[in-house]
Length: 233
Image (tube, rainbow, N blue to C red; front, side):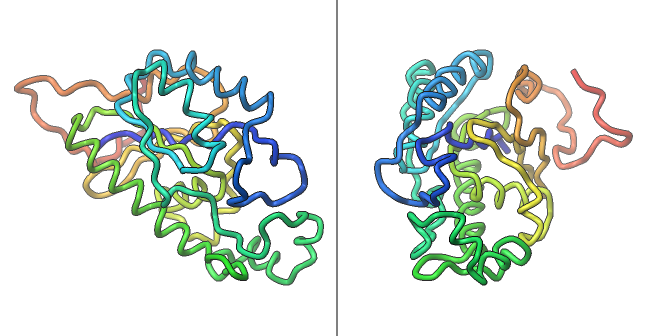
């Protein structure tokens, strides 16, 4: 299967505002976020990106816009990668939400959390993982198992996908940190995923690109972990 780079959107005008933006329309990148999006072009210059899929929200489309232009790719949007529907919590101050009884559930038992008038975090994970796996299978079919692609989404959505890839219960997903414009990398196989990076904010990404298979070479068990650990490249 292919390798997916899970990209959280760059810093937005809502980040740091103390308000839960959720799916509020027209939340755009701030000045720092615009610079982060531009830096992605340089950072991924040596990575042969085969496809870009993004949440339909503006901040995600703005994050991948410069990269898509540089790679000559069209951005495919998928509502299944959209931000959590926080329902009645949308637009409220985090300081006030922290006093709600549901806040403790979100923090300590997120699999049981359902936002009033919105969706549950378990449903978020189900839709996001299904989307990632479907696009991964499609891109593998179109470009081969050595392909690398990007999925640009939101913090809690990416954390839920990483929890699934790590074999963790959703109740542990709050232990995962995903910063704006950070990259997390997962390589799926027929039997299990491998998590190559989490919350990566800098550095060379060349090592995540799998080598193209050589003609006539014996096929190794792609789902097998290296005993003793990876030897690197």
